[in-house]
Image 1: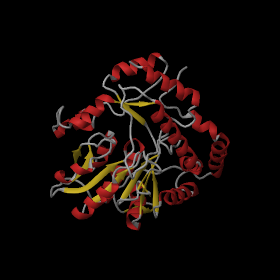
Image 2: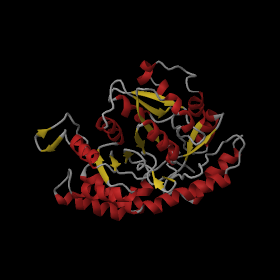
Image 3: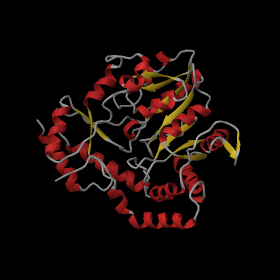
Image 4: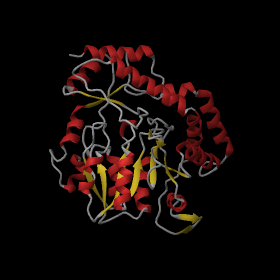
Length: 364
């Protein structure tokens, strides 16, 4: 049996006729950029998250760097962010000339809120919270810190569509919530796409201006903006998947629960969920000290796996100029050396999952 770490075709075939009908509707409309599909998706996704406004963009990275641009955070400013995130989170900060200040993660792979305040200086202007692997971070502590220190709060929700803390959805705690709709995401399109959500009307208006070359009115440019528009086709297809998000999320939670109750191997550390938070299980991430051996073992059995992520941003070549060395963030680096994402995707069959479980339990 061959089982991929992730596969997207199952998610398409499940709603094939709906996707195809929507695609034809958009193609036949003759309107392909910033039309009714984008407008409708923005309203529907804002309602889904519980936000007042949503602005569709070309990617999750654009959502991040434009968020900090609009908040006026740039050269000389510092932004606190967890060290074990995907590098795009950090790029959202540095594209604007600001400096990332890293904090170790907690046992749930999210930012250790107990370690934030010791990193705050007079240059600190914001905290970027990343809800990694689909689990909501400890947002009551984060919002309290931001309030007491008068800091901006941006949330990277690229992996947490629908995840909540204390019943409130990720992306709605701070100034701006940033989302990616890359095809592998829980709410994924069929190409690149992204969005921000906010309750601030001025931020939403500025984001619409920045995404369209800095123009509120065609050919009248107020700022140097970007070409970052969620296109009509992707918006339409995302509207189809959004209709099924509750079902799709519940399916992933069922798969995760099965893994948790059925995997029994002392060599493997399974993920857990924080009290008060929930997870939409973008990834099911185990840890193993013998990871290379495990990867090879699974590969021999036809089981795919992915490392999210093998090189922390602070050790990447892109951020060598920050001056960090191996050992700078011990917990982050230990995670980078031990984490492994096992197969998790909508449409995974019971037979496929059982095969993975039995293989993991037999690993020695």
